[in-house]
Image 1 (tube, rainbow, N blue to C red):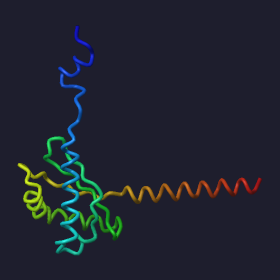
Image 2 (cartoon, rainbow, N blue to C red):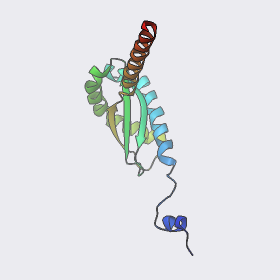
Image 3 (cartoon, rainbow, N blue to C red):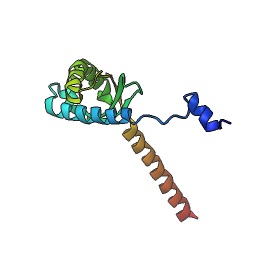
Image 4 (spheres, helix red, strand yellow):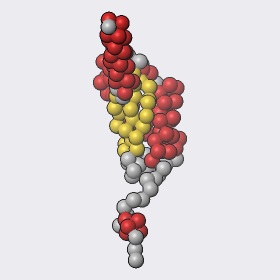
Length: 137
């Protein structure tokens, strides 16, 4: 008699996810970060700091998240500059990583740090209000 686990595995369900996309994403992040530091011809590219890369399971697409020293206001201009340089970046990745296929690059502004800061201010305000209420009573 076949168990539930065996049935799920025979249907292709419950398989462990591959670690390769995570390894490739990490390698792409390192390569792009050093590339931007070393050969950033466009001053806007020097403003970008790669925070993470997410790969699709088929390794066809890399979503590259970045922050900017200039803040969120400069993000659209930086995305435009990154897109213009993406062909050069893909060529560099192809040479450096020696992959059969070099993934397409999508650039997205990473607002995680700003959200974290906003939430931290909210928590500090709540804490200050709580302390005021305790001292008033």
